[in-house]
Image (cartoon, rainbow, N blue to C red):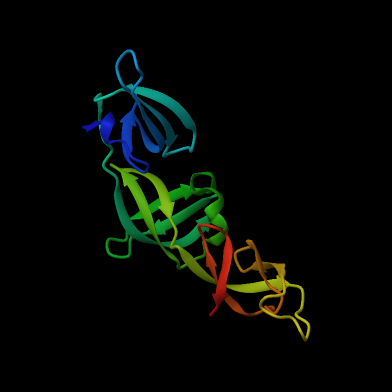
Length: 185
């Protein structure tokens, strides 16, 4: 159990048989009446966001999430299959559950799979990935690192803005949290 006074962004709780992650919280002490905590909660399974108010000191069950490192082995239709390389246990996630991070997911990549009991909730990608550029406008002599940017398509199909001197076939490091170019590999 966790007290509503201990809510912080990222804390996970159980409400109505679902896991919710605290996105925002505000502890309010009005001049008259008792204090309360106003929160924004995101459903860990489908991503829905709700606003909920708790009395100060109210206790709710805390969700104990487990993270395990798994490898993305293959894609089966709309589902992505991940395997624990120690136990050979498989986990299936749809592209809707993974969200827009699916654009950086490639076979053989190791990721953290988040579970609540037996239920797979989420996939956490590494903070940066190295991918090869498959399509971009050619660089021209005189293009510099400080000049500007152009769109480039990487091997997974994601589009990233890169400096003008980058060309097809180069491997680049991409920040998966902000969709930005970090450098060449």
